[in-house]
Amino acid sequence: MSETMLLDCTLRDGGYVNDWKFGHDNLISIFERLVDANLDIIEIGFLDERRPFDIDRSIMPDTDSVEKIYGKLDRKQAMVVGMIDYGTCGIEQIKPCAESFLDGIRVIFKKHLREPAFAFCKELKEKGYKVFAQLVSVTSYDDDEMMDAIRLANEIRPYALSMVDTYGLMHQNNLLHYFHLMDRHLDREIGLGYHAHNNFQMGYANCIAMLSSRIERRMIVDGSVYGMGKSAGNAPLELVAMYMNNVLGKQYHISQILEAVDANISQFYRPATWGYNMFYYIAASNDCHPEYVAYLMNKRTLSIKSVNEILAKIQDEKKLLYDWEYIEKLYVAYQKNEVNDGEDRKRLQQVLSDRDILLVGPGVTVKTQRERIDRHIADHKPTVISINYVPDGIEPDYIFLSNAKRYVQLATRLSQEKYVLIATSNVTGTNGSAFDYVLNFSTLMDAEARIVDNSLVMLLKALKSAGCTKVTLAGFDGYSGETSNYYNVEMEYDFAKNMAAYLNQYTTAFLESICDDMEVTFLTDSRYRQQPRRDD
Image (cartoon, rainbow, N blue to C red; front, side, top):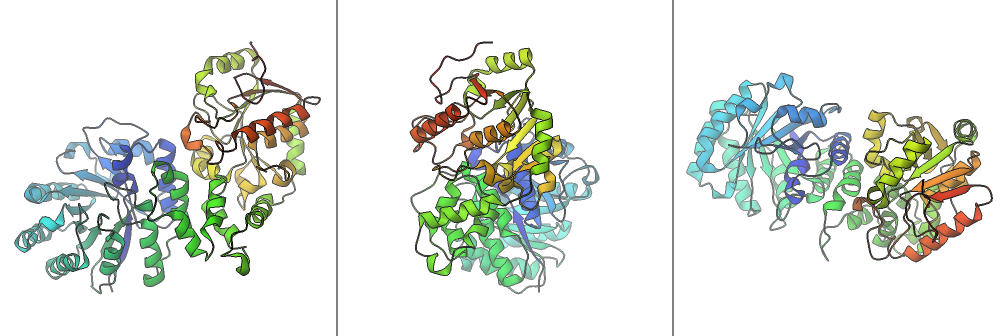
C-alpha cells in the first residue's frame, strides 16, 4: 500500500481571496494550528520576486522573506514548502535548502512551458529542495503530452508530480485516467499528487477516489482550511483529513483545523445562503441540533475544542430539541472552571493597589483619538492594561484575557513577546502555567446579565478587589447598532449590534454601582456615559 500524505495550501491558494493579506498574527496562528493538526506538508505561500516583502502577506519575493515570517516557529513533523509560478521567481532568489526554512518548493507551469520549467525544477533540486512539479490545467493534456511530461519528470526525478485541476473540471473518470497513466509510467521514486478545485463540487469526492486506489507509490492530496481558495475553492482540508483518519488510519487532529476555520479563516468568508458550513459539520459530528452550535459559536468567546466539549455534555434526549436555557447553563458551567485564585489575587493587590490604571479597549477611538491616549501616558505614566488584544503602538504592562478564542489567536505572539498575562479560569484550561495570574471566572461573571462575561465589567471587578481606586478608560466606546464597534472589524461580536442599547445601559449601570469605591474616568469618547471627556 502506498504512503499517503495530506498537504495544506491555505496560505498559498487561499491568498487569492484576500490578496494574501492574512495579517502576521493570522499567518503564524494558521501555521501553528496546521502543525498541531499533525499535517504532513504545509505550503506557506508564493515565492514571487515581483511582490515586495510584507510581513502581513503570504506572498514573498525570496526565501529570506520566508525566514522573516516563519523562521522562529517549530514545524515539528511537518514538511514546509513554498510555491513558484514558473517565471515569477528566479533561481537567484532561492538560497540553498540548508540555509532556508523551506524543505521543498512546488513549481506550477502550463504545458507549453514544461521543458524549461522542468529544467528549473532540476536547479531547485540541486539546491537540496524536495521539488514538486505541478501540471497546471491537467485536463488540457492529451495522452501524448502527458507521456512527454512523464518523460521529463523521470529525467529529473522530482519528489512528486501533481495533477492540478485548475478549473475544477475533473470527474472521477478523467482523474483516474491520468492517475493510472502516471502511475504506470512514472519512476517509482516519484510521488503522485492531486490538487482539486471545487467548481463541480467534486474536489472531496475526487480525493477519496484517488486515496482509495491501491498503488505502490507515495500519494499526496491537497486541501485548504474550509476549502479557502481561488474561484470555487479547494477540497476542504477538514473533510479530507476526516476521511483519511477514518479509512486510512491517519491521526490528524481535526479540532485544530476547525480552530483555524473559526479563529483565522471565517473573517475572510462571505457566507452564502446555502452550502458547506462549519456549523453543520460540527453539529453532525456531535449528533446535535445546529442551533446549539450557532449559539456557542456566536458568543465569540470559545475555542472549537471548548465548543465540542460543551456539546458532548448535552443529554441524549436534548440533542435534537434545541433548548436555549439548557445550552446557556452548560456554557456557564463550563466557563467556571474553578481554581484556587487566592494567592494570585494577593499578588495582584501588591502590584496594582493604589496605582493609576489605564485600561485600553478595542474601540475605534484608540485610533481616532490616539493623541489623547499618548498624552495621558506621557504625563501620568499609568499602569497600562489592555483587554483581550495587543493594541498597536501601545505597550501594555499587563494583558487581561477573558476570551478563549482571542487567546487562541494571540497565543504565539503572547508567548514570544513575554507579556504579563492576567487570565480568567475559563481561558486557561489545563494550561494555567502559561499565565502569570489566574482568576476565577465564577467570581467575576454576572449570572443575572444577558451577557454573563462582559470583559470590562469582569476586569473592573478584579481591579476593585485588588484595591485599585483610580481607573481611566480608553477605547471603550460603547456599542452602536449601525456602525462597527471595534477599530479592528475582525474583533466584532455577532450579537453586539443587536444588543447595543442593552449593553450600553448594562455597563453604564455597573459603572454607577462602583463609583463610591472607584473613580472611573473616560479618556476617549464613550456611549457608556454622557459626560464631558477628561482633558489632561
